[in-house]
Image (cartoon, helix red, strand yellow):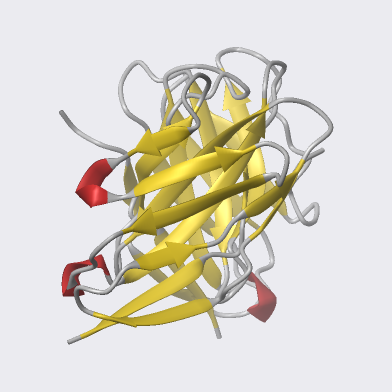
Length: 116
Length: 114
C-alpha cells in the first residue's frame, strides 16, 4: 500500500517568505508527527496530532511555526517569515496507534527546506 | 521525560566485519526502544523494536539488539556487514503509556568500506 508522502521534496525560499509543507499519512493512521532533521542534530520533535484531540505543540521552536491536520488525514506545516536557521529536512511520520503504545512510526521521504 | 545518547557519531568498518552501534537511554519509567535506519535521501524505516519479553530482539537485514535494563542500553549489532548497510542509524525511546512522543538520538553514520 501507499506509504507516507510529503510535498514538495525540495523547497528553496528567500528569508522572510512563508512556506507550507504537506504530509499525507498512511490511510487509517490516527497519529501524525512532524520532526525537523538538521545535519548532525538527529530528529527534533515539532508537533503531534492524535485523532481529534488537541495537538501537542510542545516542540514548535517559535510562534512562526504552526501546523494543522484536516479531517484527521492530511497535515500542513507552515513556517512564517522564514529564517536561515529554519533550513533543514522536515520529516513527517504516522502511526496506527497513539504515542506511548510502542507502535511503529512510518516516515515520509522528507522536505528539504533551504532558506537563502 | 526520556533521553537517548548515541555514543558514536560515525562508525567506519570494513565489509564482512562485525559492527556494534551503541545506544544508551534514560527514563524514569518503563520504556519501548527502537532502532530506525535512514538510507541516503530516504525517510527512516524501522529496523527493530523492543516492547517486552525477550531482551534479544531480531530485526530486518540481519540486525539484532539487546535490551539491558541495568545498563540502560540497547546496542545494535550485526555479525557481518555489507556495503548496502551504509546508512544513518537512529535509536529512539518512548515511555510506556500516556502520550509520550518517541525521542530520537542524534544518529550514528555507519560507513562500510570494501
